Length: 145
Image 1 (cartoon, helix red, strand yellow):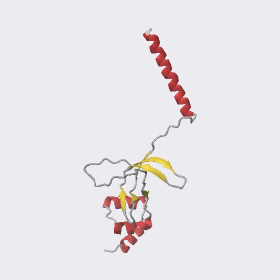
Image 2: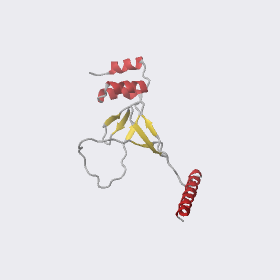
Image 3: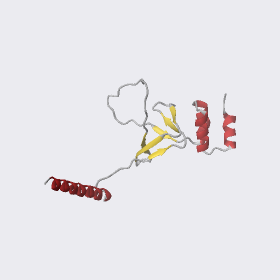
Image 4: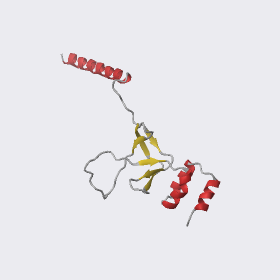
């Protein structure tokens, strides 16, 4: 008698699994895959305050969320945090995204002048933007000490 129940349970599980897969394949039950992308270049993080910038380092993994009709996409980044940080509690916790973007060649001199970029970050930026020797020489000529 117990073996009959076990066989029925296995058959029922198989039927449910097959039905689930069929519904997923037909698009009735959406399954979203999480796509991840490892950065080959640093990206500029634009803070909420004017002229508040940071760099998201090369090698950071971005997790795709969705694309918007307005022409931009949303990604997630995960951080491990050590220690305490100063913060203010948000009473109405809604989504408050900040902008992340590539750094165009014409903005490299300003970035180098205004932001403490490490040698590795600068090398990654120059490689990603395919800056040639003439462009690099011009950046150095325009550099104000």
